[in-house]
Structures are given as C-alpha cells and as structure tokens.
Length: 453
Image (cartoon, rainbow, N blue to C red; front, side):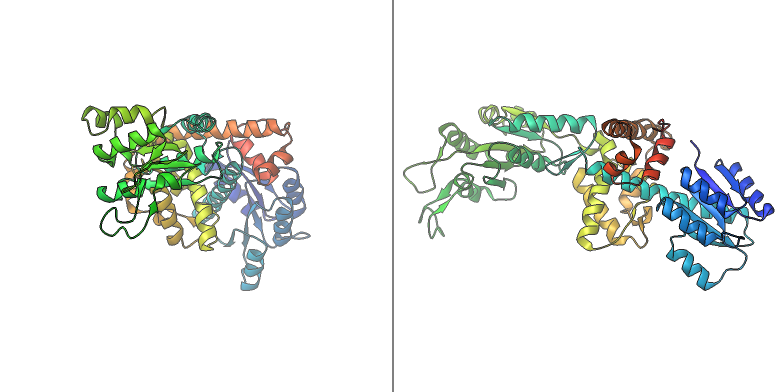
C-alpha cells in the first residue's frame, strides 16, 4: 500500500501544490487547512509523514508537531515556513521535527525531503521490528535465525542435547560450528560442567598429543612437571575437537583407543587415567573425501559421527541476514558506546544481496567495521566494506528484488500474524510484545495488507 502523507497549510495554493506533487509520486495524501483538523487525524489514524506549515492561525506548526509526537513519537514531521529563523529551527528540532523546509521551495526539494525522511523512518522502524524479533523465539544459545534451515538446526541441537552421543559438526569456515557445539553442551545434562575446545590446526603435531593426553615429569625435554591433558580437564563435560581433520593419522589411532577405553595415558605414565567426556568434533573439510583419500581413519569417523549435524552457509539462509545484521549492530553499538538508529534500507539491501563467503564471521566483521565508519544516525552503503558493496552489486537486481518481496515480506507477515494471534488480535499488546509503538505496528500491518483488529 502507498505511504500516507498529511499536508497541513492554511494557504490553499501551497497545500494544493504539495498534494499534487506527492500524489503524482505515488503517495496517499490527506490535505487539511488547519492545525485542529490535523490534530484530530493524527490522533485517530496512522500517518507515515506530515508536512505542516509553521505559521497558521489558532494552531501553528509547532503545536501540530507536539500533538503528533504525543500521539505517536515515531511520526515524521516536516515543517515549512516563509519566515525561517534560527530560534524556530532549533525549537522545531528540539521537539523532533525531521526537516525544516523554507518557502519558496521547488517540487524536487519537497520530494527530496519527503523521500529522505520516509527512508529514515522505514530504517528506524525496520530496526525496531527486527530487534523485537531478536528478543522473541529466534535465538538459541547465541545462534540467531528464522529460516527453515536454522529452525531445523535448532531442532538438531535440541535432539542432540537430549542424549550423550558423540557429535560431528560439518560446515564452512565462519558458519558457526563452535556455537552449535556450545549450544549442545549448554542445553544438555553436562551444562555447567567444563567445555574444553582444542584447535587441532593451531597446535603443532608434536605438541597436540601432549595437550590432549598430558604428560609426566621427564616425559620429554622441557617436561618439568606433571600436567593433566585436555581429556582429563574436560572430565564430566564436553571436549570439542576443532578442525579434527588436521590431526595426523597416527594421533587419530591413539585418540580412538582412548575413546574406546574411556581412559587416557599421559606421556611417560604407566597407568591410564579414566575420564567421562562427551566428544564433539568439527571440520570445514569434506569429511568423506578425507575418508576416501585415507587422510582420516574410518573407524574413528564412525566412533565420533554417531550424530552428524550440517551447519548451513549464510548464503543458503539469506533470510536470516537482516536479523543477524541487527544482532551484531546492537552488540557493537553497546560495546563502543555509539548511538545508531539502525541500518539504512539501501545498506540492508546490499548486506542481504551479498553471498558472504566468510559466512557469519564475515558479516559480524563487516557490521563492526560499518559501526566504526558510520558518521550519521544510520549505517549507509558508504560505511560497508568495498568487497561487500562490489559483491552485492554483481547480483541480478531483478531476481534479488523478487526474492526479497516473496521471502522477507512472507516472513514478516507470518511473524506479525503469529504475534497478533498470541495477543488475540490486540494491536496495543502485540506492539508492546514487539517493543515497538502501536502506530508503527499499524503501519506495518497496512503495508503488509493485514486486517486491523
């Protein structure tokens, strides 16, 4: 549905000119000649933006501005006047006017102000809406998403957490495999016990065995005293073997023996030490290709892959990107103490269109960079890494737009319908549940053609 603009001016020529320009641009326009009439409309119906003359008899533009903000703090108001002064401009901005437009102005100047103001409102409302969704059901132990792929992943995590079997987690670099491992641990019977992660690719082969199994004094040069291994350190909890395919075949054989016996022998020790550990292994390699090339032992694979979970890459769950972007924006602004109102629509389009070869980790870094670069109240395309902008612009615009309309609007509609159903159609309570203003929810419902309660 078209956005609704309220035009209020006691001068008929100015009022009609504004209305004609805005209608031609595709907006739904309500024209009024007095502040009192405007106050009644603002209190009874949702308006996307109001263009209001500052100097009017009985009730001037500043009074209309105050009434608009009382009715809905998110209402966008553009004040126009033939007698601009610094004092009135300052007062207008103090009460929340979006822009201050001096007469005479051209149709193009009016459109430019209206477009920019509405885009800022859309970005602000989208940010608030997404933030409300973040605080609802779309998170599990730090994993954020709403797509079918992620909802299935949530189900896999819950099912895996309910048992104590070893888990093999597969997925591309940066897709969140360790987060999945931690979620399984935090939601299982071992929660509160040690969660020990070891990166098999980051530790030299000759040291990895000592790290896993521990050693006694004198076991090798430099072994000044006894040291328990990670298998012992994780007793009662979970051991995560990150990048397990980087482990040598010889060490794989020793690990398999320890798994089968439930005990590990420190280097230089005579007796093994029993341990009770849940094993979780992670790799970004094609594990079956590693098996075929005999770089990974088949017997160890079957021992650790009792449950196999695949974490989807970000490009295959693109509908989660806006939620993740807002999640990281909220985190970065809180950490840096920087105030931002959200991500501009054009910037969010680029973020959503990009394929993110580095997955969630790359998205997090890009948002952090954008927060650092942002100069205004919103993250803009200029704040994003050049690689993201270039990669997004390579995507076919028509297909991306079609996907966005079909997928994101469907998800928004389903979420709003579910929220309204939860609150039995009460718009005020649904808005409170989402953490947004009632009028904001009404505007979203109107845009998505949802019936009002």
